[in-house]
Image: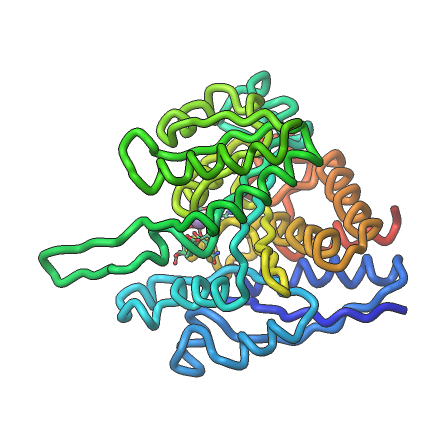
Length: 356
Ligand code: NAD
Ligand code: IPM
Ligand code: MN
């Protein structure tokens, strides 16, 4: 029987609530398939600052590095918003991604037919959407130097080197080869030098993938096209900040940001996290949607552990649960036969997983 070690980072706000439900579902799937997961908890974010004085303790990095995969909830909250930047929860997450070498963040967006009415967009615009954002995660304006704020002047630097662009472009083209073979690279090359280098480099990498159709789009247009006609997109390749913004926008295609998972990969150990944050406005109320985290756990099984059948089983269970009308509050107005709490939703999915 295979045994995998999973580093678990619950984090802040709704983080612990949603991660607990993902673990419930993982335990249920383990019992059906022939493998075992061993979990080890690590601190990161505001909770790590409170207990250890730093948002990313060394033992968390070490623990992640010696595990087979990392499952992460979310971090951040008002309580820590006024700390010096080095102590902020968000800085912990950025350092963790960097320390683990996770330069590629994969953010799939599709629409469950059962939720076609859940979006603020029209169902006929959404039906069949299946897109895949490949976001560069350890470079760009998030990490560029110099950066400062002296109370009068504030600045950051959007910087990419050719090798950084090449490696993320390869991830996008490889992903496209397994999908509909289309890549749309999103940049701001009409204004930014860094984007011109991005575009030139992506064009060069594209020559290695003659079967893939490459297009380029400016980010402002892409933001508009995503809501005008999202079905036009297969793989969207973009930098760190554009990918952050466009993927939150894309979440409304699926109906709720509480549905979108992600995989952060590129290093020895992958990290699997919902795209949303710690949702302080609903933390502690038991109403957060755990599906984004459960789907992230499924991506972990698929991409990090190679447990494809287990991942398929979770995804089928989720589809069935939605078909049967179970909804958390964020989706309660749309086809809900029963509105569930976070823990009820986790338990129902775990139950369906074991019965499928
Ligand atoms: P957010 O994603 O936490 O919340 C945005 C809105 O979506 C809120 O109204 C929230 O209630 C709702 N929402 C988010 N997840 C949900 C879920 N699972 N179910 C139902 N509703 C959900 O973004 P924000 O409010 O801008 O940021 C809050 C904190 O989270 C900040 O400190 C921010 O820095 C942090 N953050 C962390 C991550 C991360 O840990 N990866 C990601 C984004 C933001
Ligand atoms: C995300 C978040 C993070 C990001 C923040 C919390 C650092 O918004 O995971 O999308 O901007 O990458
Ligand atoms: Mn984000």
